[in-house]
Image (cartoon, rainbow over all chains, first blue to last red):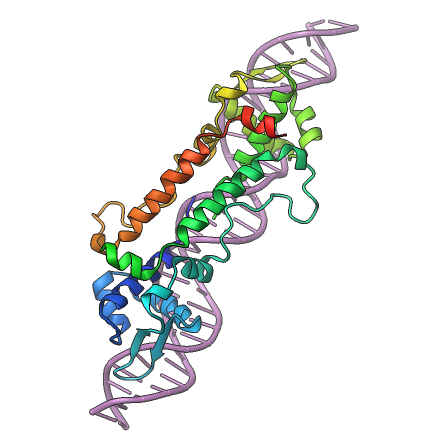
Length: 134
Length: 134
DNA sequence: AGTAATGATACCATAAGAGTATCATTTGTC
DNA sequence: GACAAATGATACTCTTATGGTATCATTACT
């Protein structure tokens, strides 16, 4: 029952760190030593964030990564979308066929309401908000 | 991001059905034909519910399964515990070692609060409550 | 030219999820 | 007692997702 996966988690930590250094360019090496995240995995993650426009990357000597957005505009749900896809707690189990147990599925409505709740709570989390708590 | 797994789901459906027939003994065959759940999988599930005291089983010809508890006393979270283990949305990623990023983990407190919320909503769901909606 | 960085990709290992298959045991019925 | 109808126990399989590793290509500063 994993709400956030490792890559989302690592992404969040990296972004929190980068937000805390106020816009400086940071290399993977720095992040690895500060955050103790496996280097090749972290690289993949940062590249994905770059592709998605959350980070800007600079190649070559002296290069690295930098936030492309202010921390208030980076939502945890953005990261979750990138690494985990759209947030759905449970899809109906019979997708294609119309669920043959529809009238036995009051579960669905309950789950949906929980889901909405979780989403609305998640939507209040930004990198900036995580930084403040720190 | 699965809140409930297939076995929990199937278990709930089976129990809802059994609750609706008011205490009659029901065979796997009946459940299979009514609920369209793969037979061997359903058998495993019912056996687990039996072991856990949620169902009573009767072997031999004329046997089957029957609720061991009133539907108001069977909680969705009971099923989740059986099939999915204790409800935790996210464990801290570094379990043994004390998390070396503790001060970078404001995420945890947010997640915990979401988790509590989900649990309290789930705790209100019983087989009886699901039956009523139907 | 050399070196320090990221970009793109392909690969791999483990575990969990979702079942399947089979043999053993119990119990009612003829 | 034999047979059939049920569950009990258990071992196996298939697929996908997770959490990585490894490598070669490219860019850019000095």
